[in-house]
Amino acid sequence: MSEIEVKLQEVSDENVVPYGTLIDASGKTPSFNSDVFSYWDALNEVDSSGRVSFGMVESYPGPIVAVNLERHSLTSETLVPIDADIVLIVGKKTDGDVADLASVSALRIPQGKAVTLHAGTWHYVPLVRERTGRTMIVFRSGTPNDDLLVDDFKETRDQIIRVVE
Image (cartoon, rainbow, N blue to C red; front, top):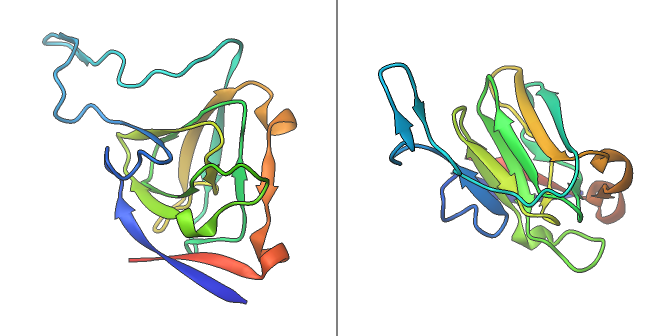
């Protein structure tokens, strides 16, 4: 089996562009500010013409390794780390049913930020390094049943992706 090593990067507005959009209020002026709260409007917008599903992934500490990637062609997907920073392994959208492993990046997304992946972006489940963590997942309702394609490259190409510091 061969390993593809991918260097872990802190997510930024620039390095997330091929895969999606960073949602981050840091350094931005609130739309509304008071002594009680601040509110930032339209940090990101997605096109939604139907029901939206809010789900939760609970990830357990372990090796930061991907054995497959999945994609959704009909919807974007927003991942919001709830109680732990996550590592998200992502690959650029392809025309076929196979992920381009040469386009893969590994992004550390801290609590307090989120990422919306473009429709068609290949990705693995959110991974955690130090403690169990929950991530809220937002996408078109029904996506796991009718818009999920998995490229199991460990099985079909005898490869895995390992994230390194």
